[in-house]
Image (cartoon, rainbow, N blue to C red; front, side, top):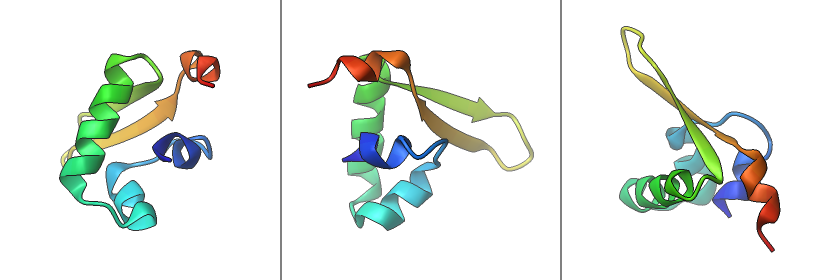
Length: 64
C-alpha cells in the first residue's frame, strides 16, 4: 500500500501516516524495509527542521 501512495511522487512519512491511518512506527519500519530492498529511495534534507522524503526506484517495477 505504501508503494501505491509513493507512486504519486515524493512523499513524506507524515503524509503517509495521514493517508493510511497507520501507526507511525509501523510506517517507519515498512519504509526502512523497502529502502533496504531497493524499492524506494530515502532523501534526507539537512535543513533547520530536518525533512525526509521517499521516492520510488526502478527496482519497484520488479514487484508482482
